[in-house]
Length: 458
Image (cartoon, rainbow, N blue to C red; front, side):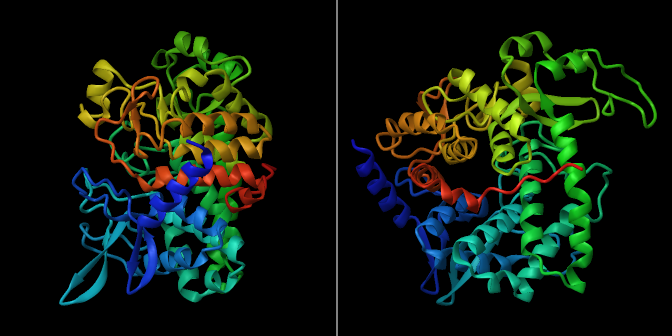
């Protein structure tokens, strides 16, 4: 099938996914699989909609994105809650759906209180801010972002990350399962994916917040956080051959301000020989997590690709991340772009870390599964760094499978050959991710919707 016909089918499927509230388009449902029970896939997830929203913005259909931003903002709690079972002030829902009662429509939000695992989303408010900035760039509608309710919404979202906390690091502290990886995967603490998104949201907020007495404290808080966050990620999350040699010779039980091994990482906790064999000299990447006695050496695609797109990593590090993807293509991309994380947890590690979650069996779902939605992020990162050949190759691989397989949510197996065991078909962000990748290839100027100028570390 020609790529033109694939694009046409994708657009038809994306149109079919749009949901309406009081006659206005307000989002897209997660999946339109006719063969499997909907569960919560009939809802609009904030993180899922971002891919669709960017495609709509590129095509000039800004109304649906504006409607989405307005309706989700109304769902954000604006007052504090003493009841721990209620969503905190500033939290954005994971998802919403259109319900009706007494013949009247209303928007019903899920803040994680109905989700599997009952984990509240840490990423929804961050994606919302990033999407608001993209909307403003595409539409030039600065008035919307400057409205008092939108300014308050940004402030409240950032308060969750910037103000009161049991933490003294520049990263944001989050529980396991609070992001795109919404199943237990040993990611509690400071997972890379959330840190990269946090950095993007801070950058976007600086552009969106109006200098005013109400915003001054928040603007100062952002400015004081950006450079320490940048340094922490670039220096302490970074892994390459040189860094491995440093970590391998770490001293432990160091005390005081001059300590080099600040997180007291024990070398025996890291699979040096296997990692040194896998990590090419020309490659490098950001570790999946960092904390006391913990350095998670798994490669997480979302965080690394976002780090390139948003300039969280510098130019050299960006190229080394793409070098790694190119040189370990059979591991990270193979038959479907691309692995959410690598390698998968197996055997005892899988049982202990994931709680033996059968949906996270080795090389499936979040535990080493392949997610086609990452195609647009791989494309954006490659085009940003003038490595378009990687994007073209990945898109060509995806086009051979996605239509025939009916746009699955994810793929299983070490090489991504199998349609995910419990994957929904006609998954909207798979469809939108492909369309977005095609748009970014055709016109790299659209990258301005998601990229940021580098921040000088000082």
